[in-house]
Image (cartoon, rainbow, N blue to C red; front, side, top):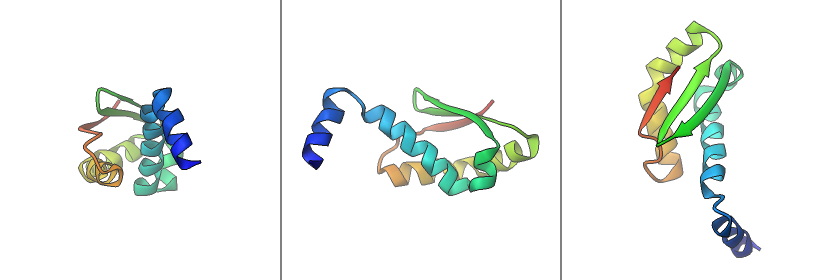
Length: 88
């Protein structure tokens, strides 16, 4: 079954969407539930992760931890998927 699912994912080009969902999970895993609930939206475009935070204090904390967060995400994925994190 695993090979069949891999073939379906590859055939319908679902890898990127699944990887983006995994990045959102890693965001919450690294930063914690408190920050996750204050993340209004997140998107990935051209290997840049964009996120909007609900409060300036949360934004400041994420800003200070973004280098470590980027390293954590890339290490967890086993590839250099995120080259920059921008808070908007």
